Figure 1 (cartoon, rainbow over the protein chains, first blue to last red):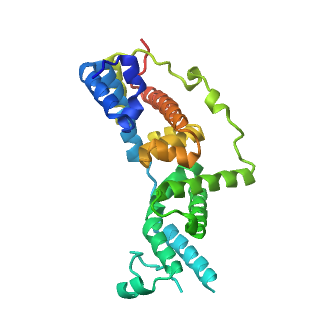
Figure 2 (cartoon, each protein chain N blue to C red):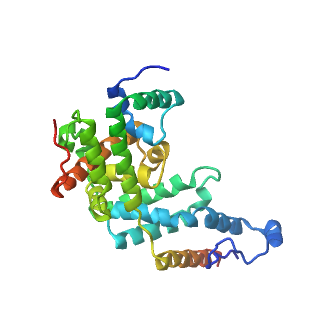
Figure 3 (spheres, one colour):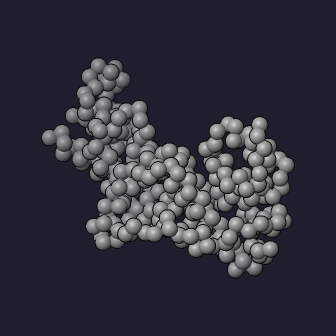
Length: 82
Length: 215
């Protein structure tokens, strides 16, 4: 395991939270976070923001829209078949 | 003749399974696979369309146009490759075309040339206590504030943040959808998230939270 510093750790916050790191990098950062309150607080903040976006920025389509699109595809299908 | 069944679940076919295995025509097969693979992704695609167009009417049009194009082009979809990325890419290109026709195409915005100071909030060394206060303030924010902040991001960053955080697309998938290198996805995410954080902290400050005071 190699030692990494705060600057390096802070730089990788998104890759870490989104699971886009190699196992080695993941281990190094996890070890650093365990011993560094400052980096941990930074990671917590980014993680909080992610959860808020995930929770509040989903949009649900109406059933009418989905049915309407299926009907449209149905029409296309009929047009192609004839 | 192939039919697209209208009642959910789509897999409930008129043909029974024995007939299906024996007599499924290429056309039937196409319809069946489209129903299995593409149709269930419509709600997720709608979310992305809303985030792209910022408007329900445009999002509905965009989703419909995307599904029609995808259906017509489905023979060109290579089975076994990533259907989600394929559909998102069609949607993204459809949106770009719509904007070009409407004269709304964003010229090459100088996004990549934005300096860090323009995004706001230098990478200050903030105390642990201050960071915790920021997390708490953001955690307490109402839904509308979070939505509003996300919509304030420049289009490209907003989409990258949305694809990754809400839809769970990997960096590689986002790169494929937006036709940009993975490095650009990464830097877009970093910068988009940074701007978002600063916007959220601005709101928090307006609400009277004592956050973001640089030390």
